[in-house]
Image: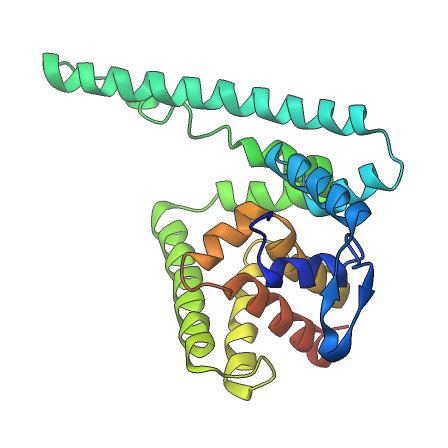
Length: 235
């Protein structure tokens, strides 16, 4: 009825967000009216852009209004950025049509103020700010190289997922090692932080959509593979 995948329901159960009313033979999950109403609330809050940890806090008694106000501020920041970006595109079109020259510093208006940067600083503080400063200092070749490296890791993981390789397979773990090295270009996560990053890939629909564009289910696959890697290789 809700058009929510069984994978999503299993994940919600795993993180304690939506346990079933009971579990039957073969692990079949049964959901009754209270669980359906909770799922409806989860879907509403996800539609508003809240992540799963924040949704859990709201449903378990935190101040829903305060959570929505924080999200509202992020949405307003995104509106301002997109408005600025649209203005930049319009000026570029006019620049081409009138064969004028747009000031070089104006070419990138709207790109510098990443809306997720403020959210990252809010969630992870000084560590996020340091990672953003490090990335901002890269020259164009370095930035393109880091992007290409990340894309290659995702492609290789997608191929392994499609082949049916288990997340503990040495080939998968080797690629996850490359992923950890790639993440370390921004910041170096230990066991708990890296495991948390893996969970973020499935908890935040923005990350999930990006990863699953390479292969359906890649976000959950990478999350599980990261958990294995972190447990065996990190402290």
